Image (tube, rainbow, N blue to C red; front, side):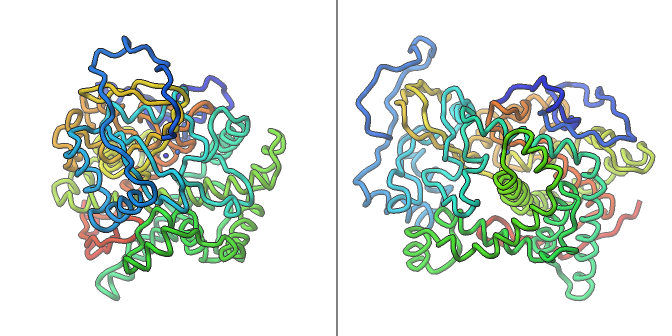
Length: 525
């Protein structure tokens, strides 16, 4: 997945999923007959220079950033082994917090040489220091979407797509406007196409449960999610095209070619680290399959490509960006986040399930039996559960930004001087589980954001910015922030419109939890 509200009516898509915290959850009024979607509109070794920000701006003691980068090549390699294998990602950071007694420190992050010659970062692991990564007046977001390395543009048609552009680059604003245009143009199709696609998912789960006694949520979700995005955003059904049911598998392979240097795939340690973390997978191996995706989206995107030309963007560049936004950003988010959402709700047990079912069904009945935006705004527990899942398990956990100038960055206890050009890195699950902000921070608390708890939403930053702020052409907050929130809420609504409760088994996969459904209890009231 920090922002300003756009005044342009062109970008004010009626998708009011997020509002400023309020003690009255029911103040917003809606027209139930309309689907209103508001996507308001996802160390250099330089000589020391005087800090650009005056020291008197901070009242905290200015402290030298602890930690170091060690011996070039050797230490980054050792750090990579700790990060992936010897300690694991969470313990890698926890151990250094304990060692340095600080949530801000210097270290190396994967992949390191030879893929990323400079793996040096200043790590930010608390809710106070982390938000500097969203402030594009202080950090540059050029080519840092995947961290200290950038995948080959051969994987995106030779173009640097929107996610890799800094807001200061002219193409950033044009491409983001194009995404806003698409979301606005297709807003009325979102709810009906989601319900249709995920009705197919639940039918699949029930059929497999009946025949096998269990069913893979992840597999069914991949197909349903891809179909939903194609149908709702492009008006095309993949099953009726030459792409057929191959879309999700092609996307997964294509994403692997981009992210393999920073993934743990579960292969034997020596083999995986030697091959995957030292060498890029050749883009030529995925070229033909990527072309199949491109052809599908090009044939389906006529109205958006026409708008792209009006904005001064070539149809080819626009299509590669639409493909990336749909397949990497949106589909990738659904693939990562929906299993996490199912995991946390599943573990919530019968009490939480009953409360959600009662709230959701009551609100839908009050809306005339139709799932609408207005109905969902009257489901405070459902909304809180989704926010809490984004807080505790954000779909994009790693954030990067390069200091545009010399800065002073504050944690809760200290202030630190950062030099221009230094790479800043934040591991989001630590920032959003900061015990100084959230009570029982490591626990999933379903009603955390109900009532007065809404005031904490400014600390929910899954979308590359605070939940209380909006995506704009001038920031890097996810263009489809409210679109993603909408379809995440719809999953919970559809689930508890059909079932009183469900049971799961949770496994692991390279891209998050693997969810196996073992029981679905049909709606009884």
